Amino acid sequence: MPATDPALAILDFLREDERAEEVRDLLVSSEFIQEAGQLTATEITESESRRLQMPDLDSRALAITVQDAGDKPETDERVIQDTVIRIFDRGRGYDRIRPVRNAIRHLLRLPLVFSIGEQRGMLELRYTGRTGIRFDMEAHVFYEALSYQARVVEVFDD
Image (cartoon, rainbow, N blue to C red; front, top):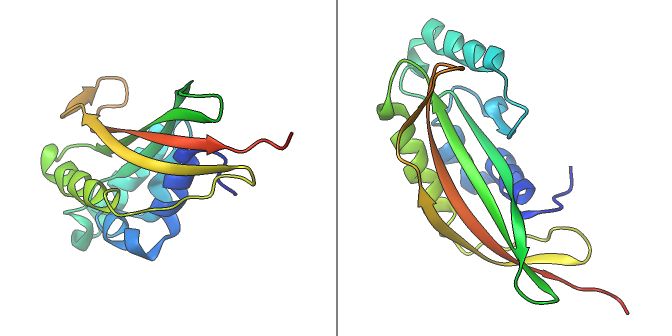
């Protein structure tokens, strides 16, 4: 799917780019890198079951989601778009989440250029914070959320 915003560009990068292989190697499976709203409790349980069945996966986190968290105008041609990346685990606490968080933070500091549609481009991506460890009572998972802002330029033909 072609990226149309920074969240989709980051999602595609984490799923496909060879530079993100380190992140994928810290997960049970790269199929559990999904857009926010797509990951289900059943999939988290499936990921956890795989980890329990395969001892070589024991040190890996369960899943990552990437969320388009909205935008706000900066100028007529530029917007600031927010993206939230969440790392999930169950039953292992922070030990599985922390290495994934560190790998993502390291990767997204690299000079990355994303074309996001024919008339949009990301000028800058910057880290704006993290939540620390949280627990979701409904899904029974630990997670940490990393926040990023992207400055996006939009070119309009007059």
